[in-house]
Image 1 (cartoon, rainbow over the protein chains, first blue to last red):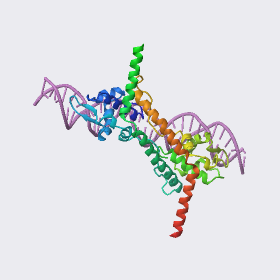
Image 2: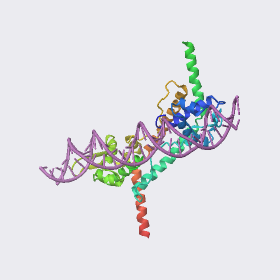
Image 3: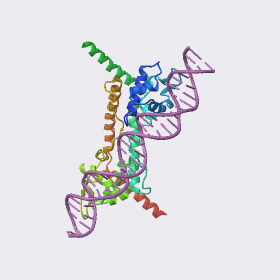
Image 4: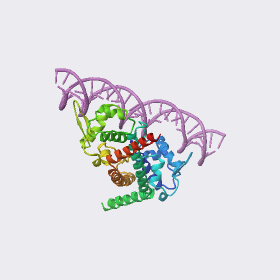
Length: 149
Length: 149
DNA sequence: TTTCATGTAACTTAGTTAGTTACGAATCTG
DNA sequence: CAGATTCGTAACTAACTAAGTTACATGAAA
């Protein structure tokens, strides 16, 4: 897993899980999809479990399943569960008492608040089901073209 | 300068420059405002010079000045000149040929495009002049309250 | 020509995150 | 119950990024 590709990698995993709705996939299988280590998968997906997006079971036949139907899992939830933050700039005061800094921070915090609201709204309109639908569309296209050739 | 506070620190510097419109401020002076090193300032602000947001002059009496009036410097330009990226997630393919990954990347790239457009629009509506105005408002308030006490 | 200031390269240091190893806990199968 | 399987998690390592620092060349003013 490359740096900063947690959202992308996690979505990749989740689409694979959506495509195998009644078969628990192991961390090892999921890790293979994104070319990484099973422990990294468990660590990353742990946050999704707490949010109810996935469930896990131990032991023989155990592994990971979606916690609910893909239609009800939005990218906003996934991103939030991963603790991903768009807008990666700090507004921690470094010169307490400096009025210039206070004005800057106030402006940036306002912007951040509004921006995060906008982005969350956009992301909440995309569901895992949309991604699986797009995947199947691509899959069918390949199938057709293979047949044509 | 703390991690990921480049935008905030740079704005801090720029407001100070806007408040001293006819006096070139040295890297050392600017560095003092944000508690960092003159070289870090030069490095960071170098990008702004290329964008015409600031000008620099060497030698005796040299230093930094705004390249144009604060009313014509938007946060969108500053952020772009710093090379700051909101939306810090990668969409580099890691499994070329995987249709699941392609669907994920397509969705994220669409989202990113739209999101960056929205954010740039928001940021372009805030100018350095807005920040200095807010600073002065805060300054006057302190003055009033000090007088009252 | 001396002094001051930027421009920039090279190196060091600190912090973050992915990757790895190891092992305990839970669960299924025979 | 024994053994195999799989998650949960802690602890450590490695790689990468960005700030901080040192050093020195370049240019401009007094």
